[in-house]
Length: 215
Image 1: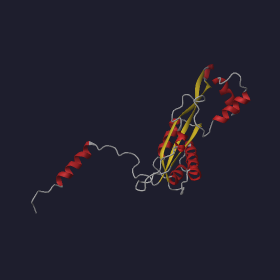
Image 2 (image 1 turned 120 degrees about the vertical axis):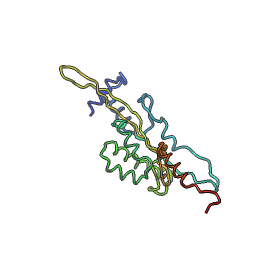
Image 3 (image 1 turned 30 degrees about the vertical axis):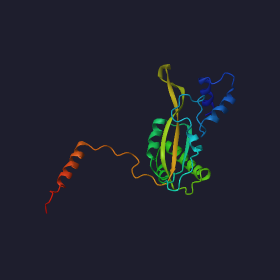
Image 4 (image 1 turned 90 degrees about the vertical axis):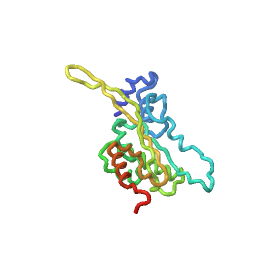
């Protein structure tokens, strides 16, 4: 792993003045962290740049007759060694679930990205309880869950007859927002009715008509 990271830094030419050992320490400090995304390190990433800053928003006091504002917490894991296209399926799977149901379902998902998503959700729950005064750990649900494209390392793959090809080692960022309270009954908007369904509704409404002044 160390040789691969050192060779990757040489190919990327991050700095001509940085030695291999120091460059490896810089790379290890930036990968697999929960710190804000750095544009200097990853200029082509996709996703929010200030996702963790939403935790520092201070809202004005609410009036007694207003509906209580539910607490929320945002969390992220950056530069996960996993394809963003594969992570999208896992991130979409847990949307609208309670944290207990999401952790239970992810424990049985046979995908590498499920372990990263489960770890991020558990870290967000601990953050909500310890730093955001959420009383009950189980009273949280996944309000937002999505991923973005991370750093892409390019390598060389050997082919037959002395030929070579290019291989990409992709990384992704995972973002999650937990909200206090019960999840909605229908998280996703219902699809529009088809022509046959609309016709059936019209026929039912016609059959339920009642003649005025009749028995």
